[in-house]
Length: 388
Ligand code: ATP
Ligand code: MG
Image 1 (cartoon, protein in one colour):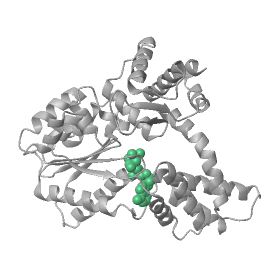
Image 2 (cartoon, protein in one colour):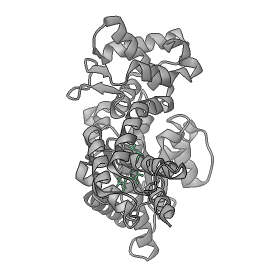
Image 3 (cartoon, rainbow, N blue to C red):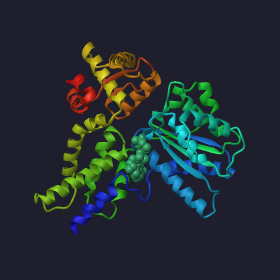
Image 4 (cartoon, rainbow, N blue to C red):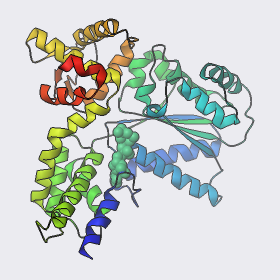
């Protein structure tokens, strides 16, 4: 009986478990829902740009809104609409976004290039289907390309009188449109913007507590400690849930090995888990990072070693990154892709980036130890020699 208490807690804490509600995001929920409802009702296009650092509930909130609106449509309180989710992380290359949207809208397959042309034609003409189409473009940071045509098209098509296209774009970077498009273009596109602030410790407490409600597996001060530890570095709900889940596993392990008879997660357990996870968290992140994110970290480390200084600039690192690409025969990323890489590494806290400026003179520091960097990259055959 006591074991099920821990098991139930583990299930409720699982990242893929859909929570019954999203506490602390009521305002964002209402705002997104009202924009989407208006656009669906009036059959007009709209483009909503949502930004916020990782784990602030952006994806969860939009999905929750869509679930709610789908229910309303089912009960005839709202016109029916179609919904598709395109995730930048799941595409093999950014332009594949066109092929995915085209296939969803028409049921036909096309190459990315052809799909882009066909969609462009289609959005000039009156729509073939009366239903508006809501497109969630998640992880937009990963869809930036040198010419920015993808972001431009997906933001511009909703403005066409006949497109009936509603785009909800989610990115980590607040000013991606300004950075990637000219100011003139980004202001003409008239995006509706919503920024998700990082959670503070009160909110993280509420989020974890509401998931665990009724399980009785956690001491209140254990949840409080977890919320405070997380909010001190990031305000990331995913991290708070990860810590609590790991804590449940630790207690389960101790019970199995008869090291304890208590089936309760205490402050001491949370403390141990946080220590364990902070030393290995960055290693795990780097292992799962993209090729160029890893290379950027190596370029940063090399620059710092060479200069013998604690910090260097974005310019210096990108210069060296491109040198490494030539050396290893890799296709060099564009400057904007490098800026996105730098932002992603900054958001993950693997690097510390000067917050007040986003140009080539932005100052960068490595925020992981050389040991962690080496441990993470040693398992990748391409990088092994670079960190040996
Ligand atoms: P990323 O930028 O990394 O994609 P995100 O902002 O999309 O992050 P989500 O995936 O929405 O973050 O949230 C991360 C996890 O935290 C999910 O498991 C989600 O269910 C949970 N979560 C986030 N906010 C809340 C909340 N307010 N209440 C309950 N759970 C939440
Ligand atoms: Mg997300």
